[in-house]
Length: 392
Image 1 (cartoon, rainbow, N blue to C red):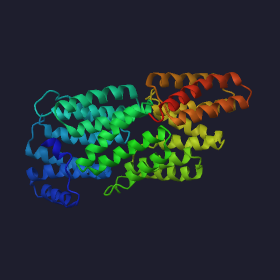
Image 2 (image 1 turned 180 degrees about the horizontal axis):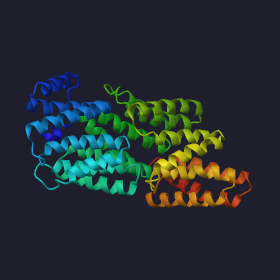
Image 3 (image 1 turned 135 degrees about the horizontal axis):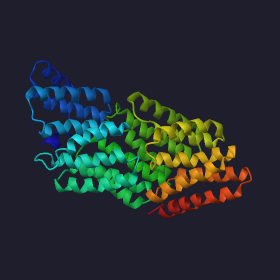
Image 4 (image 1 turned 90 degrees about the vertical axis):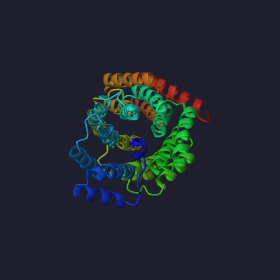
């Protein structure tokens, strides 16, 4: 029943107003479940700050009611906060919420929360440590399956779709994403449908089907009732920018990236991926000097996460800067760093191929074919992985 409450919302918005009025009137027993439902609706719509206020108001009601600290009712709010923090890149805060849930692992009533905690940790680790994220998603999938948590299973499938797509396992990625899409359609959860369509767009883009990618991104944007979900919209708009960039329309891509970054700034979410995309436009236009400060900023921000996909692409883009400035020791370090991350995570992406090709050309332009030959290893590996997987 508790898990169902976290997924069932009143779309009218009147329930939130009623919940607030009940809390103000001291009707905390009636207010608490309505406040949680209202917070879930805010989550689905991407309204971050009102969500935190609603969860705090609900926790105040629970304290007045004298709810024991080991009651799963507390965990519902912690889980919701953790999901928001993880999505916004506030990873330490997400982990703090999940640590509270994990303290009650094995207690009666906490079983489904324990499974969701695992999948939320996997989501939190998605951009920083993909190997760990995959292990957690697989564990979370089994844990959610064991307690019959269909929503938790769908989220785990969507996360595994992201990871298998990033490692070039496109057929497996599609299977995970289609499972997720079918579940959310049947259960009439618009935000889940939008997420699954976004994932399918990413799979199509990475595997080279830009027409299908554009269709999926646009379909995700067009899911009704999610206009206020700014972070979700930002990802779709950025996806359309990726399609434009990979199609050679850099001006259209820049417009999309600028809009996506604006949306992320409004909702306070991390925009590192968009900033990487904009840096790739600068590289494509030969503006190497303008790229270096962007890469320096991203290196500093992602220093705590040395095995992340962001760190990998930043290391690869930096090769173009090193070639221009004759920094060959730095070239060797960054190339080795990229190859180490790629080997550990089996990362595959058209951008790795494109940037590696630019780095090869940059080395050849300054008469360092030896360095170009080193980077050709990346070109060959990415081309083989992408070419061999497309159309699986």
